[in-house]
Image (tube, rainbow, N blue to C red; front, side, top):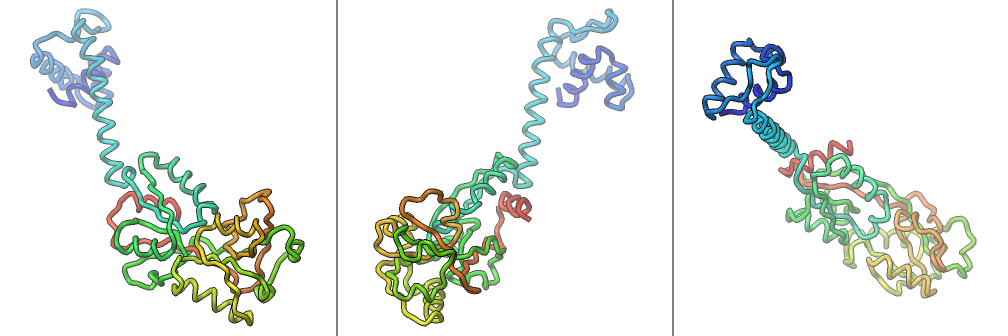
Length: 296
């Protein structure tokens, strides 16, 4: 017994005709008849009552008909899953994103991808930018969304693509003298107590040096009370009126009716943060290729 014999048998049973089944499979009727006879001989049963018009299944034939359809459905399913695996339509992708980026539209995009590829598991990890870079380089993550605080995008083995250019926002408490303003410039923060949101959690990272240079260009050294990459804690401290903070705008754009908080754009040509999607060019994850094709 082989799969084609079961296909021919199911077709004859469905059409109740050897002739129509032969036409469906683009075969001669004699070939279909021969295959059904071989199947009956192999099982030592009679599957069709050939004296009836149209022909009909015997009791043994009815049993095989239901079993054969189930077998063929399972075979087709196995073939489909195998093809999906070869094209990356099954599997998993380990995704890293920098702290705060969960407030962007990343979750919406991941949901869209999941709806298109439900058999690909998206495993998400939230880290500081330096940790994400390290985990990508050590093959612990497949793709990351982060500011390139370590300049890994300049390495030959790393591919990258700009995912978002986000402006910066100053977070104030509602009683602050600047709270009614439409926007602020960095130089206006010269007398403020700064709750500094570090992109990496490492004081001497490229990310921190970049923002310190922006303060220097504004003409002052910031009075930093605390450095942290914990956005929620920084917002809590601002709400408690212990200082102000500067964060990427995507971190706060979705916050509505935040208790005792006001968000103002930070004006200036250099007041932005670039978030890159980065991955190793040597990756062998077929599911990851589906991810890239989806976001072309």
